[in-house]
Length: 252
Image (cartoon, rainbow, N blue to C red; front, side, top):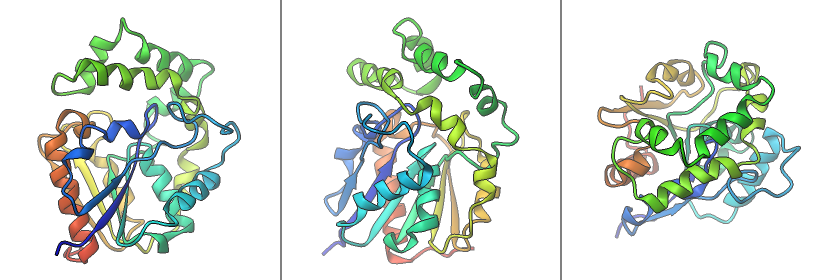
């Protein structure tokens, strides 16, 4: 009998749990795949104006408290930041983590996060991304394959609905990353070789946080394989979750 494994997937900025909806039905029956929407994102916008990183961790801990082990926590993009912060306080609640193209390590070197802190720039950016006129251009940049129009509409409209979008560029900076303590949880760094949003060179600094870690680079993936390659994505995440839950990685 196959072991039941829970995977909790945390989405990135401007998004919501729906970003995993195309891949979710493709996971095998032994995978309990959960994809919550964080407070302040998409339509989940209650009482988040003053949310701190610690409060996001507490929200996530409350979400996880009744989930039976083995439990694998996964963060994509900005979602990885929330996973790292969570692990500073509640590492005992998970059996392993998958960090997929996550933000954080090189915030002191990247121009984009600095520009987004300027007045109105982040607000303008999210509304340009969300606007129907710009969607076809941005869609070609974001996705490798043609996406269902209904799903595409949901994806882009979520940026405009995202109350927390602008705040994230101020809440998360390089000083936050430097304050992180070593994390006693096995981790897999999952990246797409074609990811143009967050390059694979982010991994080196992140690896220093985990004594047990493994790197998995997928040649054909870009930044959103859960959307434009859902079958491949479900297979890969299942593979990684099984190995983490069985402690079967030859960690280096």
